[in-house]
Image 1: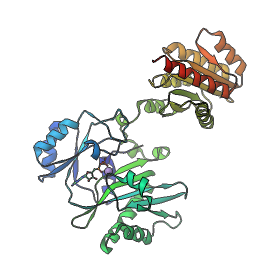
Image 2: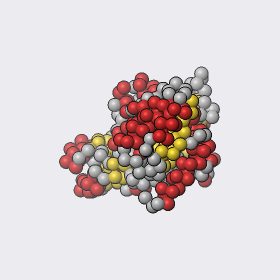
Image 3: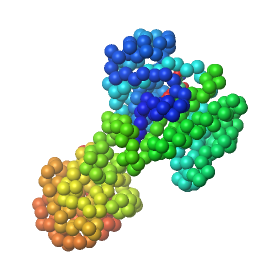
Length: 393
Ligand code: GDP
Ligand code: MN
């Protein structure tokens, strides 16, 4: 789960990390009191969306007067911000963070993440922070510094020294960095975070380290331990279908292709996606309806897949181990009758009562294509999707 910048900064501040003073507003008429609270004569107006790249997309505005703040707020609030991370549809801006300005001497990059290869928490840092960090990582990876934390040892002073020297900090700043790493490391562990990213971490003209931007990603699987963090969820920033799936306890991830996939079991779902790819197609989603699925869940899953306008054909691949394939077939038929089916559906059933299930589908008057093997199913669904696409839907 992603947190907004203002939420991330709140957590950082609670852990003693320096962040600019700021106030959030959700409506234009809240701007005057926000400016009065902050004081000063210049402000930064920042759109709160779950995507980076706001600076380059006009979502971060340096305003030199209250009038300019109002103009920026009027332009951003209620609109959708499209950045290189948001997807083409952009994300809705329902809240702005208005901050005091910071006098920036240098923009650094600092992140805490799980280094899966090393199975350790790692700090990543770069002297080339700011808005082009992706470019830096791609073209000059040697400018990205890494310091891993062995779990039994915990954070050591050398972590900060190594990164600090690499960043070209002076001795006093290195001590400040060591302190900062300790606070971030504690926050990372305590909140079961997957990522804390501060870009830029600035060195101010006075030489202090300040988190000018912050992004925290929490581990979904650990959220049950953090009700207070779970309450920070902003569903408006999330894929509506993924949220709907969560409500029905379905594991659904939206992808870029045009073949909707409904599968029981994560491993089988991965294998199914591989086979779709192998046959020249592209999955529109990953969807695991679970091992012990029911006809109702199949129906919900079906509606979810068909609500995606990208979908040009659907592949149902169910292995009836715990579930009975005839019940699944009934669920598919129920769902197809309930929703207006505009795309072809290919079904492969295997396992308990598979023959009975396939017979039911074949005997029905529904436009369902059955397949005897997974390979055949993948082949048929890719062909069916091509046909739908060719019809220029
Ligand atoms: P992002 O583009 O979504 O990552 O948004 P950021 O919060 O990182 O802001 C983008 C850029 O705006 C930063 O890299 C800074 O260069 C600039 N910026 C943000 N806040 C301030 C500020 O208080 N003063 C100045 N001068 N620049 C700022
Ligand atoms: Mn940033």
